Image (tube, rainbow, N blue to C red):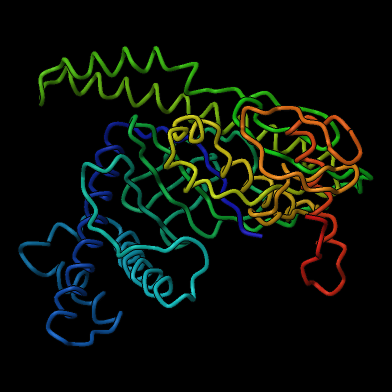
Length: 382
């Protein structure tokens, strides 16, 4: 399995200028590739990927308008050209149905005002030196905060500068993970807002609400930003403060999700969740709370960690009525308003907590699908 390992890097002021130049050159090459493809399409001329790379890099370096492209590593420019090619390919595959998941739109031009700036280098453009520093072609050796060891030699590295001015090195590595010891427990998870997650074994995970807790600090910082004169140095400084406040919320949410998902994967042999349409739910009046919860990030972590450590992960179909079925006798009692947190089954008279009952049903539905030898969906009581 290929994974990304990200580390904080600390370039010197001279190296920051070199990286800024590399970011700008990569952005120009990417935009030139898009523009050339669009012009060729309007003219009805087919152009190959090799010819595009020759025009926007090789010939451009010899022209007076783009001669400064030769001042950065060529691997950065080649990868930027490959990014443009991949963006178009993803768009075409999405239109044809070859690409799974949410539909991808046409690639857009990059801007120097984008919150994230990045470049990617392959093995011929970087190396990890004996002094534990990261060497980048035409940039130099960067100091890296090695929070953990790389499991193998990286095949590529992406240097990222975020909106707060922090620099990161993201390595792509191959991992050969050893499966965790088998566990006898299985769990179904019902995600919510009041309580982040209710597990089928009765445990609950409280919602941390990182954005809500930081709302006052973010509001004050944003108000101060709005009162600064546009284009002033004070406004630039305040923009950095606002970006750092938002980054602290995002980092805390990501760290919390990693800890919770790792604990669940470590303790259970099989994990089942409901396939929620988060993008659709985020269009409602609960959008702020849904984005603050970070359901998609949490579920994605569960999925790849289960594959990494030999666990079973499954998603239950989103239209499965987990909140309407009695987990004891299987009788479906119809839709229930969200304000109804406890209800009594009309058949067996069992008293159910809404979320705990839903988690039990999700576990049962996921387990039935997992153990179905034919791979077809199992008809459960609904």
